[in-house]
Length: 355
Image (cartoon, rainbow, N blue to C red; front, top):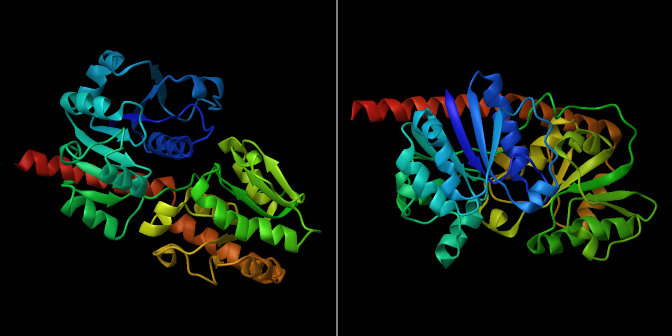
């Protein structure tokens, strides 16, 4: 297929989780033989912090305003799939233009589905409105479960499918590196994760002052942390495997909207598992459909749980990590997601031709 993607960022992973997902998606599509053009809004923040090593991620082009997209109107019209991502600057205007031009299957790729739906209810969503949703052939949602029925029943989505995050096995793999930290967390700061991060990570660090902990991601330096928590401002996606492999366990903390809706795994769950590192996570509905608690993942409600898990016998820790990695390799790689997307595109195109 010829594919055009318009997303928040491919060039920079600073302060956003979108670039990691888009790089994995574009790389997987390229390996499957698809030709991908990625159109990214050129904004100062990402321009100053670009960390993309080109070569695997298709063709990247930058534009400065929705009007400049007319330069790629032919590519959009002739593509078999045009995909628009959430949080796109001027996303409503861009989607309106692109949906008029597109000649193939159109999809909205929502990496933030619960946040999007909450913003639509409040009337504050800047990248999607309810009138646009029925115009897309596919609504690809990071979150599955009941939220898919809501998208179709209440918001008129033609076809809503769970399109969870995934890993690139060539990037996310076990590395033989020295262990530096007992527990680590990777994620951009958000206020709705502060309380859980304080309970599960900070209080565990205070309880175990002789152990080393780490937080990687922008925004955390503004808060007060125990002295045995190391802070790393930013890690490029290419550094994630080494980061995970340097820990005994990785912590997953879910955003409030995502936890309330459930059925929306964070990419750190799959990345860490693919690197052979067991995950300690807060609980959310549907977690047990991705990993079996106690066998493939550890679930914690308090720092007491975390401290207990950090004392797990080494053979049990390694066995849990091995089972989780096996699960991810069977179900959550780029190959699995691209095959599903290919199938949905074929079905959508066939239905359109039949009508």
